Amino acid sequence: MAPKTAFYVSLGCQLYTEPLALHNFTQLRQNLLKDNASALLHTPPEVTRLLRLNTKTIAIALLSMAAASMSTAQTAAQTLNLVELEDMMFNHSKALRGAADAVRAAGAAVDTARTFPNPEVEVMNGTRTPRPNTTGNTTGSLRTISLTQELDMPWHRFPRVDGAMAGYSAAQATEQSFRSDMRAQLRLRYYDLIRRQAEGRATAEDAKATEAMRKRIDVRVQTGEDARFELVKADAEMLNAQKLAESAALRVRQSRGALRAMVGPELPEAFAVAELPHIFAPPPPLEQVRAEVLANNPELQRSRAERQQFDRKLSEEKALRFPKIALRADQDLDPDYRSKRVGVALSLPLWDWRGGPVGEAAAKLSQSDNELAYQEFSLIQSLEAAYQQYNIANAQVVALDGGLVRQAADALRIADVGYKAGEKSFLEVLDAQRVYRAARNELITAQFELAGAWAEIERIRAIGR
Image 1 (cartoon, rainbow, N blue to C red):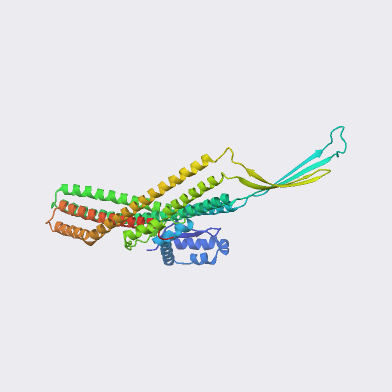
Image 2 (cartoon, rainbow, N blue to C red):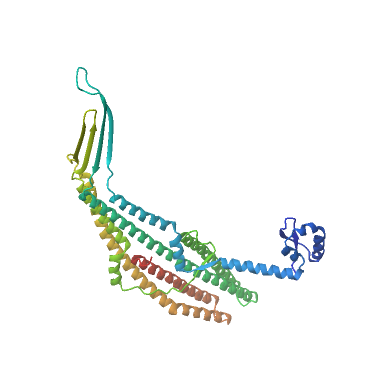
């Protein structure tokens, strides 16, 4: 059947549609060609040819356009894997750019610490007037020019520069640690979305299965083979399955939003993730990774750099007890004489021996030592816990995927066949369904926990970009 739609052409040469009876289409086209002849003179040739098409051709064109739009919509949902999502986050994340800005600021602080103090120039003008009853004194103007250059002594300069360089190293380690944390969080949200999608598919299949079971029970109740109480239980089971499916769909939307918030606005709303199997290369032995973490973990590197920074700060505060030395040159100009003087200016630490700043720097140094020792201990404990979680989750995945889920599925099929043959009751089918669902959900959870443990180990190792 041809579509009951007519095409109109307005004076502005815009194309739109309106429902119309099919038998009026030919008459309408003739009226258009007759009444809108002047408008058709300005109509594009493509639209004019469209008006001369018959109804069947127009229907084919409409179906083609609809198929093209559906194909475009499907293409818009770009499928991304974990590596592509990481690249997108690292290239466009504002938080990572802020961490890079902190590194540049620390580099500028090193340049500031390396600069030498600027000289000070002082110019003073005045007048010279002789006293009354004096002879030989000339009246005129006076001028004094002074130049002072503070010397950046080595015991002041070296601790200051070393402290700034330690701060730069701490900023670099902070950026690397932040990138490792961001990458670990992205991986967790990526695998959480895969988990939620798997739960959504599973609950949708459960809802369809319970609905089909409910229909069969309804037929058996109508024919008198089962009591109406069986239908009441089937209705309750179907409603529960539908509720679980709706909850799973909501969790999928929440997980998609969390992943997009992690990547950034560059990730389109209509995106899909490549659901790769949970296959991870087994991590190296714990002893090897423990030594690697103690040597290369960015969090420990940051703490060590901060500790060095506080140590240099303490040395700088102690060095400020020594006198500061400055070279000074003066020139006095008056009507009779010109005098020049060159000397050295010293700041004598008579009253302020930097007791407060030295004590504060020493306390911060001791605090950094204690925090570094605690951080090393807690990081090793976190690494061991991640290894234990990985081994437990891996064993669960192997056990569930290798036999338990398959056996529960076989038991469910046997119970369903037995129910159709009248050998099993509906309660036995429900028990088999619950056992299968529990085993399947445990497998999905174990796969996510395995991915989470792997991501935590990789975060502590800080392997990657």
